[in-house]
Length: 255
Length: 57
Image (cartoon, rainbow over all chains, first blue to last red; front, side, top):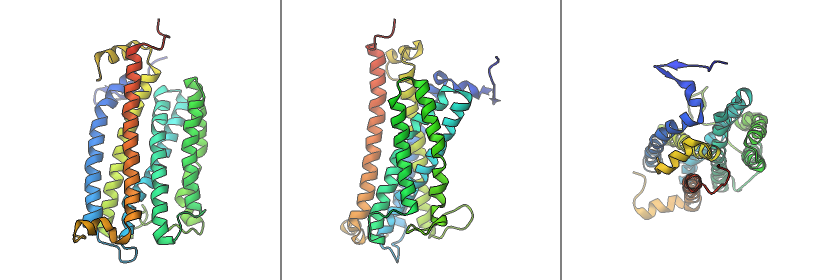
């Protein structure tokens, strides 16, 4: 069987489907994404706290938006990416795909928790309650349990290949929850407000507020990429710990 | 500029608990994740270097 090739700019990109080839590439990318995340975060916080004005209805409590919305977007998007890698791994049986899926799950769970936590702290002053069992909040809570379930299932099975496949099936089944979260505010009468920013219409918020939110969303993206790649590198080392290349690499120090 | 002073900034128009409770916990958890990421990498490198697994010929 011949190796698949995808040659762009004299580089065969399928080469990076091998964990050994991907490891140094990911290592080069991590600091770039980490710094980009830090810069966007500082700029976003500056815009959010010092440029964006106080809201005439919600006062300064609305400033929770700059962490809440990016975290909520990220919680859903990471799940989609995780399910994409899991599906790819199931179909093509590629080890790196499953590694990427496993590497993203904890960061996805982190952002889901942050979205729920900040939502609760925003709900109290604006709705008068920390929590309601409405469609948006409940489906986001289910997302957190899906992440936990994925991680628990993977760690409960010793053999990596079986753990990968079981986790992948769970991840794919759970994808059905993502459109439910996203459209819940349209499909049901919820306490949670509808989207202020969508692809199909102009945003219903001040430009400076939007700028702060988008900068924080970019920071969340870059952070997730950095964290995912960093964790993927650790998982590669864990799985290939008996391979010659990892042993040589570990003895060299910390590249 | 939105704030007359530092204490004005920290008071967040009376919503300090909610706003700082959100940002504080988020920053704390991200900090914890970064520590866990680094310690996971250190642990696996130590494990490979130590060769303590016994399953290597």
